[in-house]
Length: 425
Image (cartoon, rainbow, N blue to C red):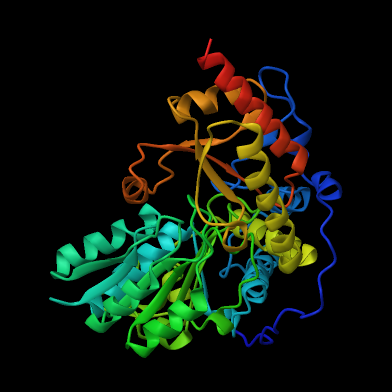
């Protein structure tokens, strides 16, 4: 890969206050009506985010104007496709302040990125009796791959508990590190509780114990400033569709020396340098891990999403979403008698509020809210062990993004009062 100018740290200047009402004009879907003729109130951004017009146009532009394959063609249209695809690598590296774009491996989503590390790094570094430390708040994507790995290798999983107020029990984490785990893996921001974990502190503690660190940043990259150099982690993963980009896009960042030492995850075209009948030589990183034709338009769209987020400023996005969380944590218990909220105080929380109405199943809550155009998630949110920890079968979840406005939280409160009235008739 040709040398690219190393990324530079984000500006330290105080961010301008985000104007969500102005930003909403960038999201065409917000002008639509649901099947009941109600305006869309989208409070499910933790599942997947809405897409701004610049992302839609980037994807459409590739499909309309230069829909060629990448890395092989030497004609103008193919070269344009390759250039746009590789520009995304530079943009994503800049967004998370990666030392070099060649440390960015494109994947379909954070789930694939974690599986890549589990298969490629894990199966060559985890052996019998080795331990991996996770937390009780992990998404299934940061749990099941490690379960499969330790079952195969006869290793062990250990878990950091979650306190009643939704924070990690750091004293237990410190004790678990005395087991000298090979890897510690944890979420940056919980998709159910909204907890923003102290990732730099957790990483420093793990490194002091000799462990490598993988961070699931799927809920962090769209919402908080992420600087992988400042955090100091070894692997960092995230999905494009959570960060205003298309589905089918995502990235793994890892330190170059780790990627160099890891064997390929999948084999086929583009990840090879030379192929002979009985042996092959691998391509350089990151291409060694990018077998086959990728979803080119999706990755180009993720680049446009990275541009959009950087134009807003991630400090401004974080400040605004914290305002929304404070507002929601104030309004919902005041306006909806009996509502049960889960997770930490606003200063420790991202834009996620999970809740229950006593005696009413979350699925019923979500279905009734839909009649008013309000979209919330209902279920276990791919965190069944975390729900078991709190003795919950399911929860409803409202999640925010830069296009969310306080009036939508007011509408949620009014909708929940309607739900209570319907079930109390």
